[in-house]
Image 1 (cartoon, protein in one colour):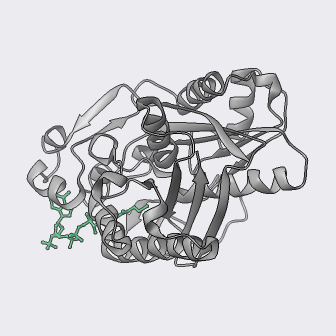
Image 2: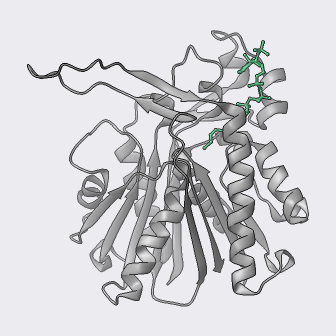
Length: 315
Ligand code: COA
């Protein structure tokens, strides 16, 4: 399979580090050097499904195909206002498609996992065109009183259309259960029979543990793929990494021994938009004309679970 179109959509509200310091004990002087984040887009009056539908329509337009040409829609999402129906079903209706659809929750690694699901469908000969949409609103998972967590995230949607072709050279997925390092829990509707104790907690994170996992997993996934494909890190033209923290990106860059200009970033403007991060970055690079036909891309993402994934793609 190959990627034939990309799209993205961001909420219009921009929250700068200085705006956060008006109600939180934090500052640009703390946030920027530790994360590389200057601002993030945050949902206000928009609905996530509308951002997802807009990103999907832009990707279809960029691919030059119609919604009715789609054989499958995969949506990566951790939370949105609906428990059910799935976000992919809402997107299907919004773009006027009629194909089957599926939601996956693979946290920030969702785009790579979605590529892998799509790849399996292509290999089984079931599909010709698949729409992947990653839509996330982590700003609704964090406590806006918790400076440790809320400053890191932003909302948005990124989409890609994949079609028959030879673009994807390899995908590596990993998972290593570690559920106390990055999690959010919430209570469900009460019943007359619940006797266990339950409570809700906003997104909780052991930042330094997540940082170490991220660098190790992402470096390991990319190295595994390069070795398996008999490629060197030098042969990759663009490393499109999950935009969680510029220091994580720089550590992976140093591990790979590659120059900074191969690592486009948008973490300074968007913060960490979970699984939407990779496809938003891909779309921005695509629309800027940075990606030339035949370029080799390495995508890599990591997140709660812990899970991680990487893909090597020829553009
Ligand atoms: N503003 C000001 N001070 C803050 C702060 C903020 N927004 N957030 C935390 N602090 C404080 C802490 O309370 C702590 O204070 P203390 O020493 O008095 O206890 C101090 O800053 C240092 O905190 P620490 O956690 O040691 O900082 P750090 O250098 O590890 O950086 C992260 C914190 C979160 C930026 C970093 O660990 C990180 O990026 N981790 C990965 C997170 C991530 O990517 N998550 C998503 C993965 S998908």
